[in-house]
Length: 158
View 1 (tube, rainbow, N blue to C red):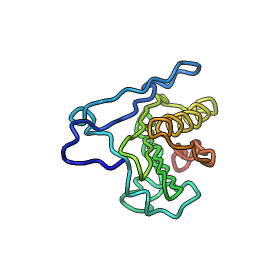
View 2: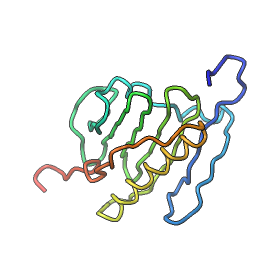
View 3: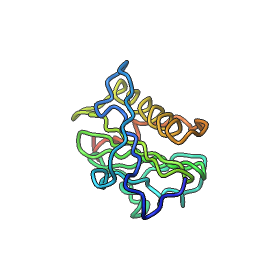
């Protein structure tokens, strides 16, 4: 599906803003004018495919993650996934190269995330990829599990 100037709406799959375990996933079409802050992270298509990459901001380079900011990025070549930790939230965005739809979710992780939080983030990445694949009518690709703990490095000297 190719997006044209004549398109009035961009399809954005908003998947469970709070990521509550066991809750149903809702896919909503949002007008493009209301979805300006959510865009497929096309810069991640430039990463070596098949593995997760971590940096403070992948689009800026390979600066190491900090306790307050870290982005994980993955590409298969046709799919991109970004999981960005900022403050008390992790924002997950995914999209397929051949589809204009973008999957999006935020997970509240709090001030001291631990193993249960890392598991919720990892599962939410899977849900976002599954949701955007369904919206795009594409097979759900295999994505290696995200080691979400890497999004939360300990402060130096801790």
